[in-house]
Length: 325
Image 1 (cartoon, one colour):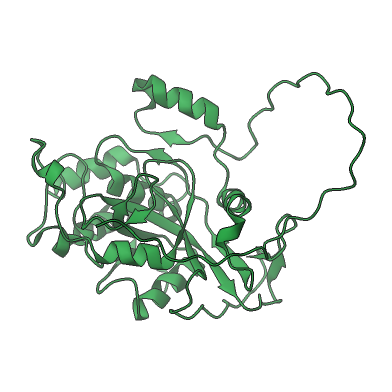
Image 2: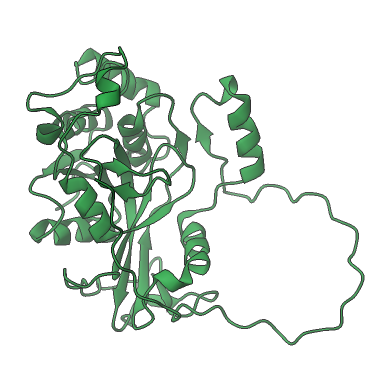
């Protein structure tokens, strides 16, 4: 079954301030040398880079990976018509590194990215996550088809709290996920991956993992205390670091196009903004093991009850040890 993306009302409220008055054209100056990499912005950590000429070339063309706020602003400018003009927007985000997976390691790569928020500054090496997962019998070659096993692995290797959600991402679970992200903690979410990495509905045949570390909320009025409007995008607000701010009222569950998850996954070093209901629907229909994987001659660890029991309607809330709920 193919995915039907949720409707996304037009929005022009995220306005880019107009440029200054036009000037007469002048001959272009000689091209300057390439600028040095921005300080504090690390290049993406690409697993298997030393073995792949194509990955090296792609990385050189991509340049430095922008931080979460810069990448979201790029997406907002690029897809302005997807975001509702009747709302103001508040962005809560945490910076995640990038790591390109090798083989079916999307879940472990997502956990590695989340680990940098739970065990800063370096987290736990991916090789360690793979080793422990194989020793415990959670995986044969890096695949993870069980949210329960992922939670046990996170607790053992990262020393963090891991809360497994059941019964989908709607209802009361929706508020728990959003409050968790607003507090700055990561969420691991299994979903079906489309060709452009977005969530789709393929009955689990394209099962994949993403880590969400932020959320974009559409509200009627952004709170004035502790929030500042973005100088480049009018209508976009950020919590001011170091200032006390109360969390905004969460958009109602039936309000389409008002909540977007800020996510990363192991096949791209850029962030993604996914409409919450699109992720919820994809997560809720993970029921079957991929026929192509079933016949590819490789070994996979699938829990009793299959993909439905291991992934369907489930997610993993991760927080540092000792933090409150």
